Image 1: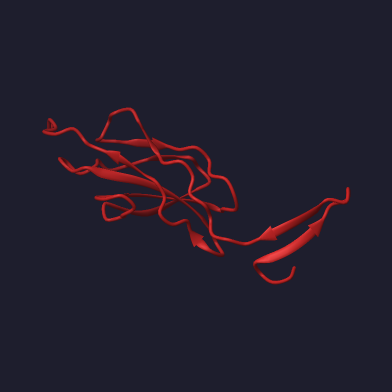
Image 2 (image 1 turned 30 degrees about the vertical axis):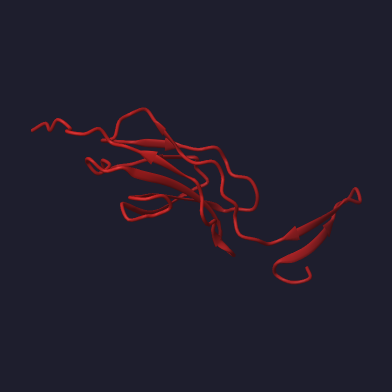
Length: 123
């Protein structure tokens, strides 16, 4: 290891591998599964590169986390919200891969989620 962000290794077959530490890279944006805004579920494709898990967040604009702060979902590629999305508000879901050394990826793609208007309330 040259330092904590660069190093080399050699395999038993003579292949040389280079390690270069860097921040996690964004993967594909999350997809809303179904149309249930009262109990939404999201899924996404696995990211590539060096990462230790994902943060899932929901905000009132792309990349923000004012409606649901970053939630560590580990290596799962699925998130089920336990609370309904805000009524009559467009929300944006974002998945940010992270690694412990360099933190979360930045400027990841967000998916717009628009809850239905005028929900029926049951008592």
